Image (tube, rainbow, N blue to C red; front, side, top):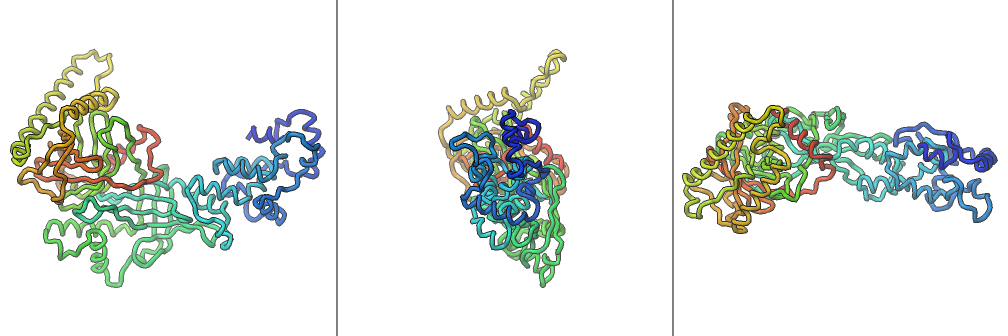
Length: 538
């Protein structure tokens, strides 16, 4: 602000006497050194409609015809003494390169700046560069909506809800991606492919949209149901949390009643009818999910989630994966790396292990050497190998605790086995590197006899295996416990986990979607996010 004041010759810093005297001579004609007080981007170019002279001036600036300015009456060839003496079309280029959030302060400097900031070229550029709006915004002139309106009343106003979110739907969770799509902001709910086709692409459906067309205020519409868009509401509750509300829930009802709604939901959610599902327990789980989720009527609270940060030392690129979970179908899991540990956190969940819980944990310091392919078919042989490593891990943890007790209390305590930190990362990288040096690039893999898999089309070769633990619990997340298992890395985009106690196998496949506005601002922010969603699930 002070810099602009000095450049323009307004405010406390008025420059030298010669410039001040010249400015006094021009003040009567220019009449543009009155400070403005607008602070919102919506008002950066002026509140409401300007005068006819201002509108004509804006058109002339945008059309490349400079406004006459008293400063141009100076001696030919003299360098400009003030930024106000620059040609208006050059000021348009300068202002258009600034972040949109800085323009309200600029509009407060003087009425010349305020008038120039009415130029739609500036706001068209900000829409494109900050939010990726590549539509032909000139078409908006037909509806009487300016690019400044689009930026201030739509994009800037709702910028805080862009990104990835997890809805609070009890144990089921979900994955919402809010994006700018043309002249709309749309909330897309991402759904796993139909069970058990884990390698198929994700499905998605719109839950709400916000747009600015003929009216001067953004309109929020609920997209839930089968009767088209209808009136909705969005409220930002607090930082990294917002809620949606449908004002016309009758649009969610179907003429055939709850039975028709259930059959339609079942086709969309599972891709089949109830008669096609012969497993009685699976039928109960499906019916329970329908009853639980349909009661919300798209009136939900969402909490922000971040994609996990990556490191060159990571086993594979972290991210979101879809995995098979028996009768519960496919669920979304976030894989992240933490020193000597890798964690799989549920983004969607079920009544046994709800969303937000850590479903699997991989001990990268303890790789497993699988037996030959014939011995691997014997479940008891695989169990023997895993239980031996489990006992080794238990002994190491006891020794670590014993060493900590013997250390001087004044000294900082050593990190426990599997803790985070640089030391853990070095050990994990060393263990991984030494194992990969000894192990072949790939080795034959087959599931032991008796291990159940929803997807028989799993890879028959793997890169490496690690000891891990999986979280199991009764219905309602009762009596949760971690049980031993085997993490199997197939390639950069697929991994599996063998649950020894359940004699079950889960196959995970990477979600290949380029999510925007989903990067964590820091490692600490990501860890805090994981802690928060787990505490909410508990």
